[in-house]
Image (spheres, one colour):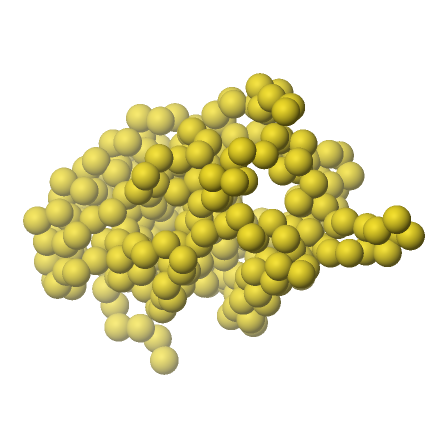
Length: 272
């Protein structure tokens, strides 16, 4: 077996999603009124208007639109009414904002915090970087790309028993001895989303994650015209004939929200 010791374990950023549910609107609105001011004191800028602060030093406010259950039952995500996102290259601001959010909101709501880290891309060659990431849409203002999707997931024990070289093969197309493509793999299955979906992934610091935690926290943003593209990409990934990797994936709920510009806007009546 090829050891995993060749994979980078460097942490370049810390991120978390604070999921809030089972609460009265007025109570949560009042209890969390100071969170945005705290975020700003911690040096974080509002992702609703990107480009106005250092990269990976930000927060976001999301309100529920819909959610569907996955393989892993998780009411904390499935039933969340609001989600607060925070990311920083420093661990302390993320821990402080999550801690203060849980402390302020817990008397009025149920709070579930999902956290992870950003690590260097271990499997990305120069060609794959140019094909996938150089063409990927960057974060746009909330009014342009208002849709947010949170999809936490874990890989099975069988996946983690594979060495890193074998795991790598599932991300690329596979061909038979005559050069015919047998299946697309992860990369080609997601191609439709590259120019339209912002993608962000946090990993658990340990692989695999422990009980009650997820291996990966995946997140997407898009405009209204490409909500269908998000679901198209999800369907392609779940198609085992196109993407055998998904045999080793267990998804949590898929949560769909709308980005909000301010704390007060989280509780405003939804637009028609």
